[in-house]
Image (cartoon, rainbow, N blue to C red):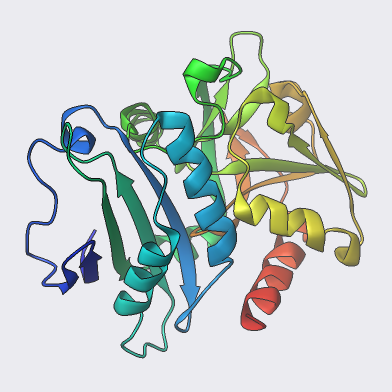
Length: 276
């Protein structure tokens, strides 16, 4: 990730090459940090308050000191101060800090990866990989922490198999979520997506699509579904703040049709973001 701008607690705007995290920060030693990533449309962050709400909840679940919301908003403003016409990616991080020390807030601005629009144009290939239902509180359901090694290993395995994305499925064949995405599929006029009761992430873009679906002509059903339900769907797609709506055209080597729902929701999402 090539940084365009960086700001840190107590330091303000920094040179992106400057070290800003102490070596004994628990974020480094134990992965005890929470983060949020969101898309910035022509300098306007999409639903920043919702991301900060989720960051606060993640920090509480991990046992971090409460986030300093105004501080993080200020850091975000610093990295977004330079006008940019192109979309960018804003990442907010809240670390535990060193033992008996103070927490650290970071705001990082980077470019949107070029591959996203390229893959959206052709449709993504996905594979299903074994995942775990994060239902118990010590499994940190719905938390975005920097302990992301499993997710990155799953993405690497997906790419090793020639796919773009991995979708986690539990030992009973229940569909959970992607490595960094929520999963959707359509059967006639109904969109299906896994329930938050499974311990999956309550995606901010997922929430936006729940709002947008009726105006696009679709009902939404949230529940517990098996992989076969996705494989038999008329179309499938994923959603995330940075990748937006990403059509899935192949899952586990089985072709899936590219239908109208994913494209219409992508258009509706862009229209909504332009009103921010």
